[in-house]
Image (cartoon, rainbow, N blue to C red; front, side):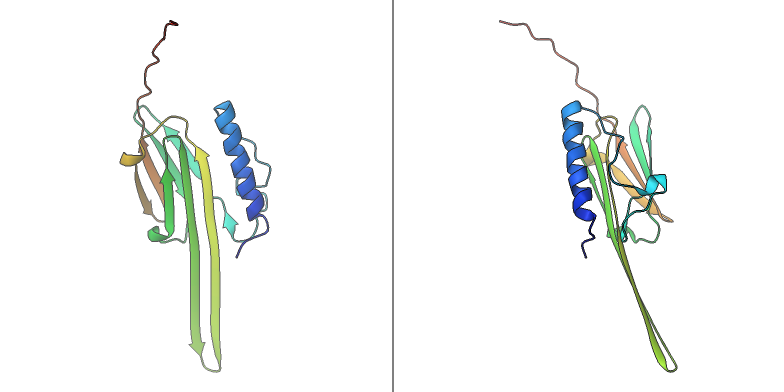
Length: 151
């Protein structure tokens, strides 16, 4: 089911990417409320909290995503962007004397962030344990600038 705010979020993400490409830096300002500031997020959609750590060799992103199975999580890494998404579905059925109890839940996670340095997507690794997703992305060397002379 598509939530009413999903189209606005996609539009906002598209505009943020456009400005990031134009200005060359990520935008820290969001138009729509996100869960990070304690604001209300539309039902069924959650943005996982993410910590990003950079050291000399790699960038490590850690995301809180409780209640998922690792096969439900999708990760896309490019040289400058990390995208995490997941869909959850849970169905519970209890039959007791005189009634049947059935409950269904579903929801989704989505988060895309610009990375502070270029990484190698091919050698990146991810692990998921106790509701915490960890993604290790080795940094790539920035190519040296080569001065050109005008002919």
